Amino acid sequence: MLAMRLVRLIETHADRLSQSLTRRLENDPFCSQLRKVPREELEARSYEIFSHLTDWLLYKTEHDLEGAYREIGVRRARQRVALSHVLYAINATKEQLWAFLQDEGVVTKPVELFAEMELFRLLDQFFDKAIYYLTAGYESAHVTAEVSVSAA
Figure 1: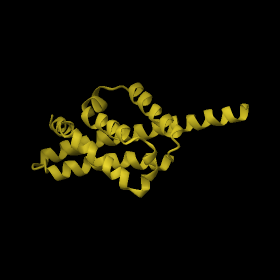
Figure 2: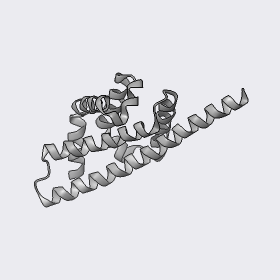
Figure 3: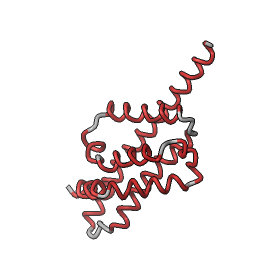
Figure 4: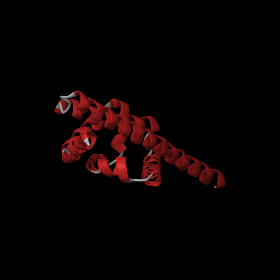
């Protein structure tokens, strides 16, 4: 499967991709509040996505995705990072993948274009679900905090 060859290419370059993404996030004013998150945590999170992309796209269940991203949403809410900054970082991650594939110039034949389009479809589904579950986790952390304040 050609799409899997592209995923393996991403996984092989996970270190470089995660370091580059972390630098971008650290310097982008649209996600400046991510500076509240330790650099190592940001880099480890992006590395986990890039290095295990096959698992995330093909083998992890909806429940796995929900659990992981709800947890991240709760964590970012507790770190007091604005939701807009977190969502911007997810979009930046997706953009990083697209730019990498374009820079690598792996598409040379029409059939490879279809494989790349299929991969983009899978990535869009993954990131759309990640955004939903992260937002749900973020919101649940705020509801929990509001209930705790009201009870006090």
